[in-house]
Length: 189
Image 1 (cartoon, one colour):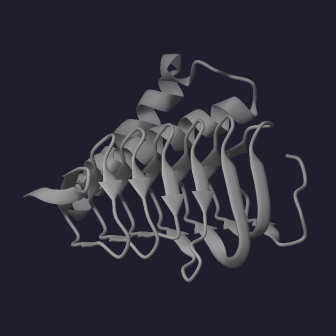
Image 2 (tube, one colour; image 1 turned 60 degrees about the vertical axis):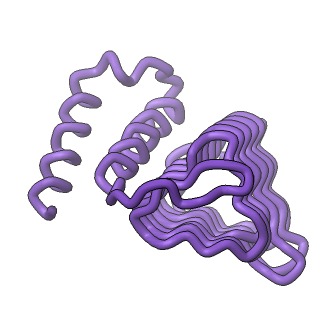
């Protein structure tokens, strides 16, 4: 894995693509993954990416003027998202091309639908499904297990990509890991 600036802390991430850019005070937790053309900048405050969280292709993460960006564990920040000075709880999925603005806060186990815009200072309770521009809660549902399974898929994929294997879903070890994760999650439920 390549080196970044002195403010960047890599705590054993699963995979960081060569085209990812990371600047400023940024912490990437264990098992996290950054996919092609991710950009993370933090000239002030800091950015924290949680354990086993995946930041997918073309996502842009930045801090707000007065707020850091904090993303919890087992989250999926999907393709083309912009996260700007927001906080996201554990086990969340942020849909394709969504924007989260300064001071917004997404509660754990939530889903933000694709193309949503979460405006400045919006607080979304845990277990919410959010959609629209501006985004609003449209349903209450605990999506924690489904979102964690999506994060586990990306974790397994990241470990494979780090070894040059781009077809992990064809491996029995992948199917077994996914089945064990689901079993553990549903047993705890």
